[in-house]
Length: 115
Image (cartoon, rainbow, N blue to C red; front, side, top):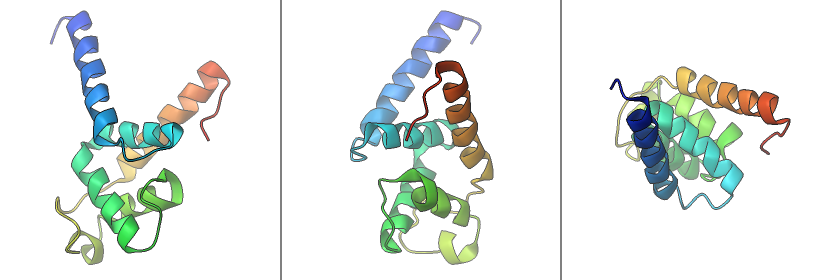
């Protein structure tokens, strides 16, 4: 906990495992958004939101206005009680804000925007 080098290495390994977990998101720039969300909330709620997205005719491989939308909806009983939801209720506001803020910070530092 007090060793920055080990903490960074653990973070890198976790991001690698999240990258593998979301390998079905073929677009690499989209996958980054899923990885960021899962890094913040854990992958289970993101997986639930992907299932809801697919069930409701949205693209489960697109973050904004698709999976992001259903992550926010997981705070409502109609959605967290849906049979495709395996991990229950979740208030996704913090996670959605984390993804947006991280992408904005990336853009400020690099001058590049992820699509």
